[in-house]
Length: 189
Image (cartoon, rainbow, N blue to C red; front, side, top):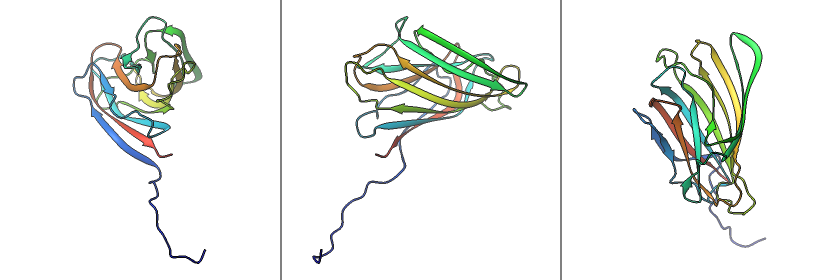
């Protein structure tokens, strides 16, 4: 416009690392200090998550309105999986559970590596009374029969009006997480 040049601050693009949690004989892993309205969407990368016992699977609960919800009919979910020995699809669904089941039984072999997954969380700070918080995921792991498995799924908390989501808890079906890293990223608006 013919006037002197001026400069403004531009927000960084992409992912911003917000927190890291590392497992070591852990019965739960909580990520709960950085969910707020700064970002509309978040991503959690789970890397090399290993369990103490073969056949275990990963569960999740959401922290809504300041409380990890775990009553008997809180969550509905569906995931599909296929593995390297069978070309068919295997699905698991539940409509009223006290947790979200992420996968089926895993190998606890340190040679095979562990569970690697990506979790997507949209609009966690939404306080609307009609809103039901949800997550989705994609993962790869080796099952207890030693076959590589790919799986993906989605879930939601079935109660409306529970308040903003301020945390997510990962925990094994039995035993502990012996190894693994969970990194939470905010996706720049």
